[in-house]
Image (cartoon, rainbow, N blue to C red; front, side, top):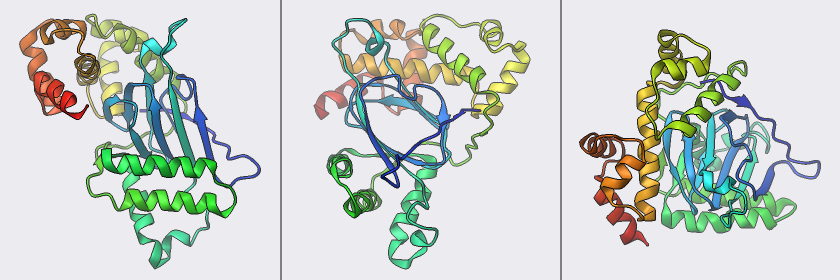
Amino acid sequence: MKPQLLKVSPGPAHSFSVRQDNVPNVNNSWHFHVEIELVHFHKGSGTQFVGDNIKRFNAGDIVLVGSNLPHYWRYDDLYFQENTSETAYATVVHFCENFWGDKFLYLPENMPLKIILDKAKRGILIPGTAAQKVSGLIQKILLSEGPLRIIALIECLLTIAATEELTTLSSIGFQGDLSELESERINTIYDFTFKNFKDKIYLEEIAAVAGLTPNSFCRYFKTKTGKTFSQFLLEIRVGYACKLLIENKFSIKHLCFESGFNNFTCFHKNFKQITGNTPQDYRNQYKRGC
């Protein structure tokens, strides 16, 4: 997949960047950057892409994304509607692996930092209990100045490194193609799919959107993403079904069709295959967690 190269500026007074995003369309496209990214979603939800991993993201999630790993957070459509009361809000930290010097991570005392940043090359989701502690440390980074700012970042990374139940996101075999030439094409495919996933998308239709023949499109998409377009579309639909299960406004059979599936048996099978749970179990687990 060929994402956009994003330039991140730390500002003249700082060696790394920390900011608060209050609009849902910041970096709302498939992109990458040399800086490592640590993001905490305070408000908002949508679909998360990290490497070849696709899943829902929700308020409270914290993700660490390694250098040059393509990623994309697409907020749900409701955040873009006029006069909506729904708000999106995230804190984002960007830093280069060597901003503290080329030898810093290779000091024996800093081995935990080196290990966690190596793991982040596949993307890491920080689990619930640890996320609560890390969220406070991210706020500390935001409010600190001078050497305390760097110390707060180190403390945050060490907390993540000491967490045992981290979730690795992208597969070990994923290789992002970092050329910028195809970024417009792949983002066009993404946009079209999100706008139309509830309907049947014909191969000829999506191929035309990409400006390719159907056979060329299949090869292109598999080469760039490591998965077929059919699998990609399934994951988008299942992710949307997860959103509807959490909202608990529809019966499971109803939300099957709302998510773009036209067969309940097919929906049930694919949902369990992708999430590891039946739709009912997924809904029950969320209720227990509330």
